[in-house]
Image 1 (tube, rainbow, N blue to C red):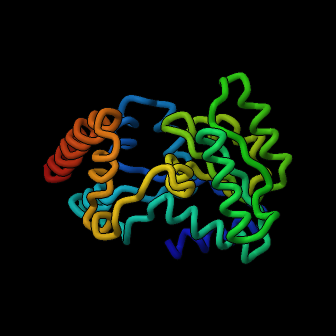
Image 2: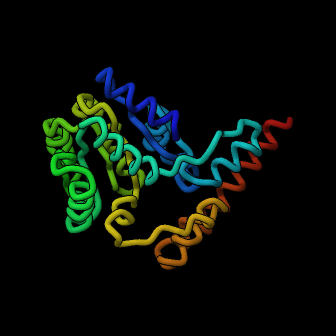
Image 3: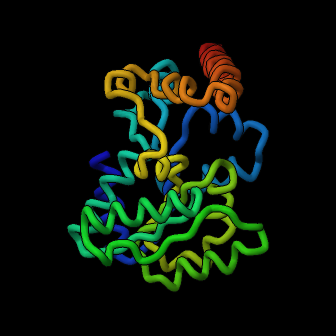
Length: 232
């Protein structure tokens, strides 16, 4: 986390762009078949492990990561840093009432000008260039995109030329829902135990069962297949 924050601060100071992405078990499984998602992730400047399962896998495969860097924790730290350094952020994604609520929360917590702009995440593909231009024109130093995968990764990758004036861009999944209070985050002990996915599953079992139960099983198989390959 500390290293990531430092790299972002350096990029903003140097007016160079960093395209950041987080990976979890589900995204890594999806990357096996989705070539566009795989390309957008692999060509990012910083990749953090958002899921504890990825940290576990890194240890099993003999290339241990220092720690999990949860996307929502990074976003919250970056917004605080934006306030300290007099930067602004742009919020893209979620439902209109949710992203508006997040904007209000940050403006009240930090300062009235910290949010350079916001927009909900419901739009057609043909609208994307115009939205990317709106973000670029806002003058924001940080962009947080709360849209499901692989849409957010592909949006950031496909419009990277338009967004090149924004020093830091990042996909944050369902983080706006948590910040707004729409959904609850798992207790700290569950986060530390790598059970945050299970807490989310309990909240929305019908929507999440396939993503977590099937996806996690596929991820475990991928890890052990890679481990066996390395042992040969």
